[in-house]
Amino acid sequence: AANMADAAYPSGTPAMFLAGDDPEACAVVAGLASDVGFEPVRTGGLDTAGDLEHLAMIWIRLAYPLGGGPDQAFALLRR
Image (cartoon, rainbow, N blue to C red):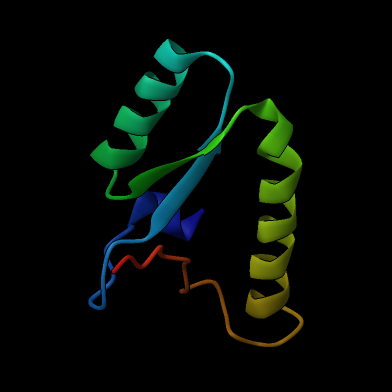
């Protein structure tokens, strides 16, 4: 929730991965993600949503059981 309220990180822009089958709906969601400071990254159709749930579980593990705290986010790096 803290990342949604403030997505600014000094080292870069966090990614907001999204999945959906409706291109128009995905465009709206991508716009909302961008508006609050994320880089929207479309991962494909709804069939990829389960993969995103796994990514969320990794974030939770890093933040809480492993003690990293909630002030961390994923980013997509490209060459």
